[in-house]
Image 1 (cartoon, rainbow, N blue to C red):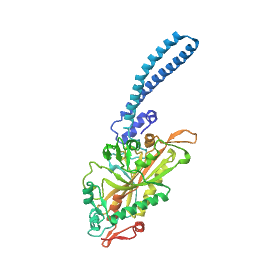
Image 2: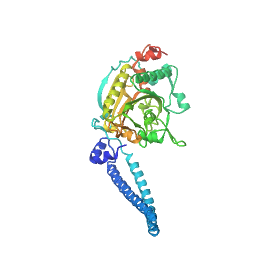
Image 3: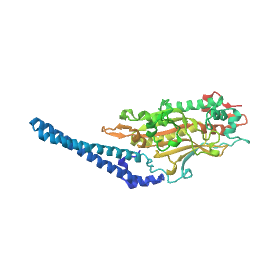
Image 4: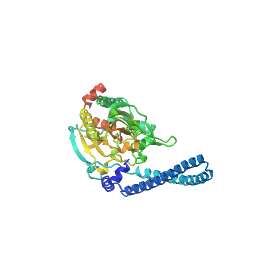
Length: 424
């Protein structure tokens, strides 16, 4: 959530930056400032009225001490009248604060100056590419056919049990999932990230804190009876570990990693992009989250990008890193790098990770602060990244490494799987 200070310091500059994200309601900035002016006036009126009540109450005590009962009774009636006026004023102030908050949460985060101008994914900037695109043997198959050939995933059973988009991994397919999860966690913890195993459901405050609500309400699975949400990523519960916390410099930086299943409705998805493992409603992902002082966050963002890049290099997958344009960024992000791997059988790039700096946007919602060197309370910066999301990684591994003898596994995966080749 943006701070009122950000809006008041440079409202026109805020509108210009919001335009980079193609935000449709720039006038909301002026509305929020006007609401804040109204709130301030009501607060001042309330404070002045309370101060007058306090002054009169002291006078009543002095009059009673002097035996001036008649004058004291007159003051009491005046205080009673003022208190009667204070109650509706307090109600107006509460309503103004609530309206201000409900409008403020509708503003997305401001994009960093490095964010490219653009509206769609075609406007994203390629930062760099790595790896070599494989040349596949004749008759090469897409991963959804390879999955059947090698009996790795049962989509039909998942559809019977739950519905379309809920795959059942089996045999070597299940072991491959488990091996990749363990490998990603091992790399992350070796790099200094503390491992967590979070809840798979969060309350409304947690989803609000990281920016999923109200922006992505329709994309989350909601259980109305308990008002709980299935997590779309472990970023949500892991970041909320520090909600309402005041940290010291000695606590920083905070570096966390977590594996979890992720649940997304993916409403409106259709076509070839949803075939096989390209887009599912439940999938496994390993996440990294960092919480740092503001002056360190962009250096940490670069470190996290390099960390994910090394993971992809170790998997021997062709990849590219994109800097997302304003129109393709998430609601909460200030700067995002997407990682895509090349699927040789599909001849397309598949997104497997996003690494983002949210600056103070999430921290303001979370009330996550630290005491700086002067002892002053300041908002922290939060960052997160996928390291990595498994479905499309598995799809690319299967497609890019198929041979007439079987599916050749990268050396690092071979060490976890106990075999160099997946065979029928």
